[in-house]
Amino acid sequence: MILLDGKTLSKKIIQKIKSNVDNMPVKPHLAVIIVGNDPSSRIYVKNKKIAADEIGIKSTIIELPESTTENELLMKIHELNNDSEISGILVQLPLPQHINKNNIITAISPLKDVDGFHPENVGKLAIGIEPYYYPATPQGIIMLLDEYNIPIEGADAVIIGRSNIVGKPMAQMLLNRNATVTICHSHTKNLEDKIKTADIVISAVGKKIVRCKMVNKNSVLVDVGIYKDSNGKLTGDIDFDFVSPDCGFISPVPGGVGPMTIASLMLNASKIHNI
Ligand code: GUN
Image (cartoon, rainbow, N blue to C red; front, side, top):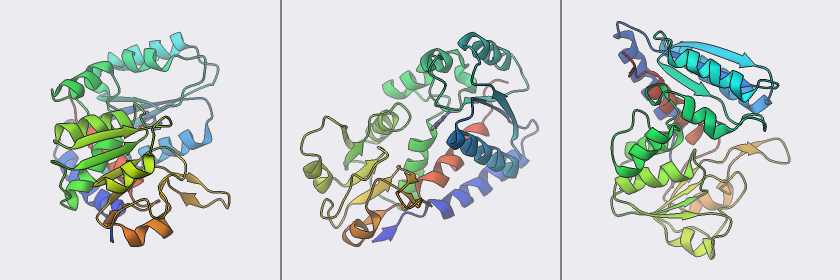
């Protein structure tokens, strides 16, 4: 078994981005909007700022109260869209219930949409035109697979989870690299058989789903899940202790996809499309 070491690769990528940014006459400037007090979201936003600071990407965190209306948030986004100093805009999800997430995502200029969630960027990815930005987590996973020379062309890839943030864009990116892609979800029959015969398994569901005897000796296992177990220990979707001796490659939690997502987001945030 070989560990897919996202922690080490992410450091290398961040160094590369830093040297690119050092040479840029105009520095990128990322605006991050957070609405409300979700504790996990606050930690994610803080980590994004730390990474941006390290690289030399300017960042502004805009903290808005839970009571912010959709209209107020839209006005803020319009202001940032029109601000030539700002090169990237990220609205941390989830948003409070009373705000329609899709209206917000659609309001961000596609040129500043560092998450790659705007319909223009999603649509471009789907029809094979280069989007301004690829969604961070799938882009980070592709970089991790490439680092370990894992063949994607012709591979049978099974994605567990169909979110707009991970599952769906992951499928598009693997398809664009000529993998044969199966997206599995809560209604999927015979999940175990699909996992067992796959060359690459990417799990993004947020609960233990890939267990002992479900994989093969060459399986490449990528764990996007990250949450605390009943003992408060960080864990993922894959039962690492039981599965890792029986597979080819596996990404740990923590230290796998998490740091790659941050590095990938920083790669996006380092790009300036609006000047
Ligand atoms: N919440 C969980 N993942 C993400 C992400 O990739 N981007 C944003 N904006 N919010 C998130």
